[in-house]
Image 1 (spheres, rainbow, N blue to C red):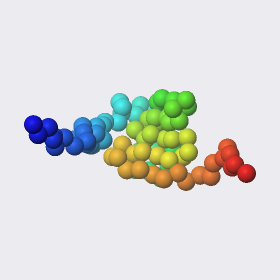
Image 2: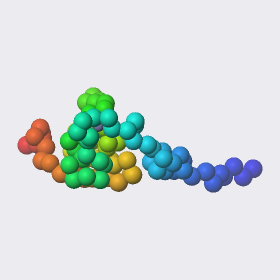
Image 3: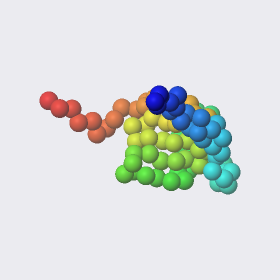
Image 4: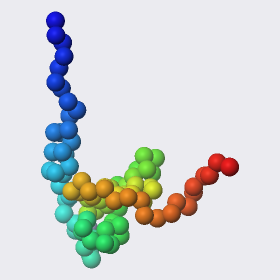
Length: 91
Ligand SMILES: [Zn+2]
């Protein structure tokens, strides 16, 4: 019996999530939050914070990680850009 399967990783579902993920309810803040493609995106209001998981969801759909890395709604990844304050360097 040839049991080999050509199953790949389930990237289709992931890419659908990424491309079809909508910004969770339009921003109703005043003044409106900066959009995800704005340089000021991090100053959007927090929609959800999960410090125990190390990330926060901003009103404009940006996922902000505790190391200052970001995941934009269009799937773009922004590398961490701020020095960590609590870096533990093993001596
Ligand atoms: Zn907002």
